Amino acid sequence: MAKIALITGVTGQDGSYLSEFLLAKGYEVHGIIRRSSVDYRERIAHLEGVPHFHLHYADMSDSMSLVKLVGKVQPDEIYNLAAQSHVQVSFDAPEFTADVDAVGVLRILEAVRTNHLEKSCRIYQASTSELYGKVEEVPQNENTPFHPYSPYAVAKLYGYWIIKEYREAYNMFCCSGILFNHESERRGETFVTRKITLAAARIAQGKQERLYLGNLDSLRDWGYAKDYVECMWLILQHDTPEDFVIATGVQHTVREFATLAFHHAGIELRWEGKGIDEKGIVESLSPALAQGKGVQIGDVVVAVSPDFYRPTDVVNLLGDPSKAKRELGWNPQSTTFEQLVELMVAHDMKKIAADDAAAEIRKVNLAEYLEKGVDK
Ligand code: NAP
Ligand code: G4F
Image (tube, rainbow, N blue to C red; front, side, top):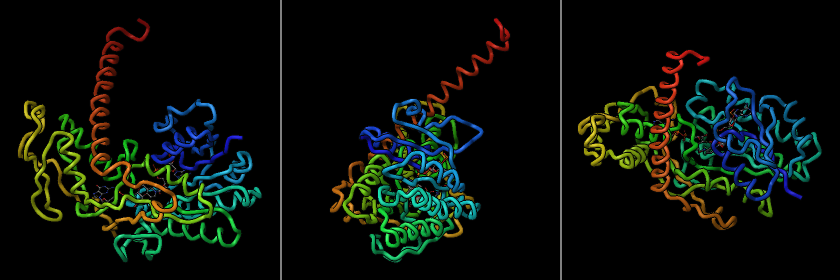
């Protein structure tokens, strides 16, 4: 019998990779989607219609929908990935963030208990390095004290503790993966890495003049999302329910990410100024770009805007993945930082060129339509 997995947050970056991973392992995969006025689900469009992949409407803020769905699907494993996952947005929408990211976890746990599945169903909770927040030690491991530093992190801390509580109170197999930042070609476009790779591609292709960023000194331990979903599965296959730090053990600043991303787009940057006055200036161009009329040597292509500063910012994340390496046999270095940046830029260079080609086709179609009329 194929194992049955239920994924909340299936339309997100991690949900899409995890679906592919579990389908390849022979699972029957069920995902939760929510009603939206635009029904195209970009990251999982290629999976819709695939046998053993099923989507259901429910919402993390609606316990009844979750209870009914868990009862209907009878999952062996639940991967709770759904969240309002943007830290800066959590300052603007703290109550919504708490409802989905904190109480949502409780709703999943209670849906499992209500359906009497607590002995058979294993639960993975998408926890986060944001719990370390205003960090109390570097690097951070499973024993490092938490100091959440945003409404998002405070909500996720509740999720972490309620998972632990249900594990101890009801003997449930539920665990948190404390994942450090992981990125990919499917990363949301307002997270800093994707914002940079898309902008570098647009600037190289003459479609954007400048990229505005916030804190360039912030340090992150960035890994590749495709590598990290394997760990979510490994955590649930472990003999005992335990929490794990998942990270690469290497950190870089936002500035270093930007320098490397622009390099792969054909633009070498030099940095001048400090704080709000810092700028990324074009030092040299690849031969292909040097011949074009777009970006020029001396252009300011990166600047700092206070709009992207946070009321409190987490600035020094570095994970120690020793436990995951030792107990799960997971390799934290499958994809290096350098490979990650390169593959994201390569993807976005193609995407921006293709978007332009598609827009050109739409323009031609529109011109033809206006000229010939709809019936001709
Ligand atoms: P993401 O791309 O932002 O995806 C979030 C998912 O949650 C989407 O499918 C979204 O659905 C869904 N969702 C949001 N609110 C919901 C609601 N009320 N009901 C049902 N679904 C809802 O996030 P991700 O990067 O894949 O991250 C997955 C999880 O890991 C999140 O819990 C995140 O907080 C956590 N995490 C991420 C990282 C990272 O670096 N990526 C690191 C540590 C922890 P829509 O598509 O409909 O919006
Ligand atoms: O890319 P970010 O928005 O990711 P952040 O805040 O680290 O959160 C992500 O990783 C967490 C794991 O640690 C997840 F739990 C969470 O769900 C999410 O996936 O920002 C990274 C850093 C921050 O210090 C931010 O201040 O980059 C800095 N930054 C500088 N300029 C910027 C920008 N961040 C964004 N989003 N946009 C900027 O323009």
